[in-house]
Length: 353
Image: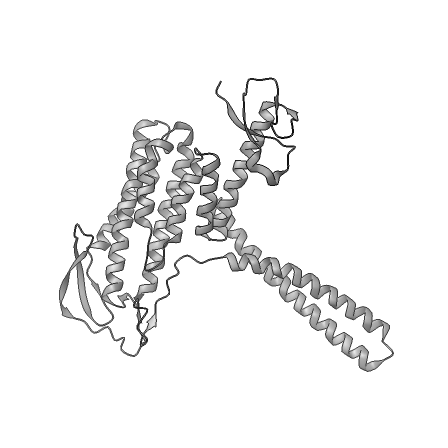
């Protein structure tokens, strides 16, 4: 039987880079090359697999809970440096690219190419199909979330702020359609080659979604200024070509302050670039709140004791009672905030599990 990677459970976990060694699963025992401890080969292999799973789960939390895709991408890449065949890390990187996308700059093309170029090599193995399909569903959902979030930022009362906003929307829509078509082709491949993996409901959903997006692409759109435009084509140089719709409509939006993608325009509100909310500050603040409410409750208890000690001294007694009450209220506020943050983050965990 081929050798497998193992890890010594006795060595310092901080020295993990030096603990990997090859193990013969059929051997009766193996020895750590670092500390020379004897162990079962299955124990070493199991420890290694647990470590890989823990690293992937950590990257998943960074991506889905904290929504910090840049850091998650590095964490997934670090896993692949150790174990190149981890499907969840390959697919996690693709999701990271979508989550890294902003209003003005999307990474949909890069994510599409990454998926397309690696499908045959990594994802078409029978034992990987369930994981692969689960990630394809997540990719499809994330593409829809991205389209919705971007459109909400560049549209006001169903009218696009400016022509650049409309061109940006068309470009994203084209990339999303192409991406969904790739996902659909992968599902059809799985259906043809794995009799027990049809996923007809997902296929029908994707077909319907692609039809909707294609219909949106050819729909005429209007700007807040009243001009109408219709998508024509994309040139080989990836330039968007459009047709102006005859006539002009009254959008009745002259009293509103409009927005722009042009960051040098000081007369209009600048459209913010963020698409997916970053929960990293909330996670950090949640940890700070633990320290603050413990400190506040400790102070409240201290002021309460001081008030009891100086109960004969009315001015000090009142001062300590007020200070203790304020500390208690502050601690309670920090505790409530902490509980709300945990609830929000827990919902995100449940959403991806």
